[in-house]
Image (cartoon, rainbow, N blue to C red; front, side):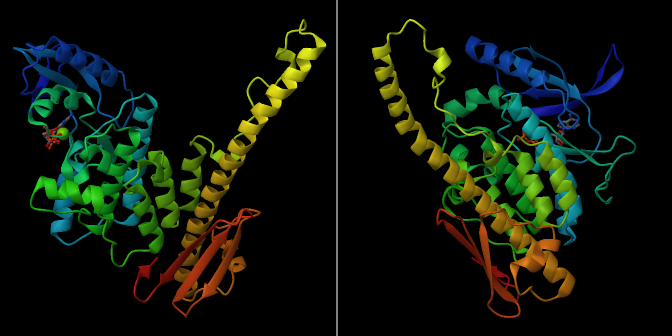
Amino acid sequence: MAEVYLGTHLTLDRAVAVKVMHNYVESDPDLQSRFEREAKTVAGLRHPNIVQIFDYDTAEGHPYIVMEYLVGPSLATYLRELHSHDKRLQPKQIARLLITIATALDYAHEQGVIHRDVKPGNIILHNKATNISTQEPITERTDAVLTDFGLVRIAQAVTQTASGSVSGTPAYMSPEQAQGLKVDHRSDIYSLGVILYEMVAGRIPFEADTSWTLIFKHINEPPPPISGIQPSVQIVIDRALAKKPEDRYQTARALAADYMDAIGMFAEANTLRMSLPPSPLSRPALAPKNANPSSVPAWIPTASFVLLGLILVALAAIAIPQFVRYRQAAVDAQMKSDLRNAAVAMESYFANRMVYPASVAEIAGFGFQPTPGISLTLVNLSQSAYSLTAATPGGTQASFVYDNTTGSMH
Ligand SMILES: Nc1ncnc2c1ncn2[C@@H]1O[C@H](COP(=O)(O)OP(=O)(O)OP(=O)(O)O)[C@@H](O)[C@H]1O
Ligand SMILES: [Mg+2]
């Protein structure tokens, strides 16, 4: 599809990477202008964890991009080497990589750019001070830089349309992308979830002999649970890999923050959360539009107030049930979040005391405070198993059962 060359920028006298696409776009003015439009958008992205594009053009009909040359292995090469020695990244190293990639992805999404091929092969590990070898551990000086942002997908569009295949890499592809449906930023969040799964488990969630079987599994099968991990981590992974985009994390940083909570990095998770848009619960209440009487022109005769009153009643009849539904959905989401956080706190408690607490009140010192109005009930099923039930005043409930000896949960 493409070749990447190490080049030299003659004026600046610096090393650059030049990616030359095999596709011939010159004969297709539509494709050529799409390529230029997309290139301009991607070249406008400025983020320390996104590869910087210096220039783009076509040469003999083939599009090419000139970009910052990053010294270091791709995350794919790094993980392959690590996993071949039966080693895994430490949870804190995973968190460090996750934050940088998540921040870069959210930034791009906020600019309206979707990557569409987030995978370890498109993440380069880069250390400004020294070269990174695959033998070295990930430290706080390691930067993860995203490459191949959107641009390449456009340049490849001609082949994809002709062959009827879908763009992206099947092992990391979201169900909606695999089905050729319209994708939004949440497709990238799914792919990030696959990378998280791979870093934690040492393997990707779905493997198959053919691309189509792999795609089928992404669309239809739940990701296999990872044995021996904390249930709180599994919950985060499962949400990132939800089949429906609306059931997933809506921002990449929310995924990274929940992962950090799950491994006990509470302070870092809170700091990251502070950069997130406000949650639905803290948003101001919805008010019916045009309900402000000052917008009513002064010349309307008294009788018109009756009509206005009727309109207001009608508007309220529409808005109030909507507001109640909206409010209930926000409370339900908070309840699920409390349940997840309580499970994380239970695991922290267990890690410290080697026994589960007798009541929810005892985990309050382990980074968890229940939201007023949401009740949580803990039942110790045995010394190593418990069930947690969260309930809202509206009567919605969710439960979580975990058995520490078998590692099973539902
Ligand atoms: N800016 C860059 N600086 C240094 N190396 C790069 C840069 N961009 C890509 N590479 C390296 O060039 C090689 C080829 O990259 P390329 O993007 O063509 O392949 P890929 O990511 O494996 O597959 P895909 O085409 O699906 O993205 C990879 O080893 C990649 O790490
Ligand atoms: Mg690539």
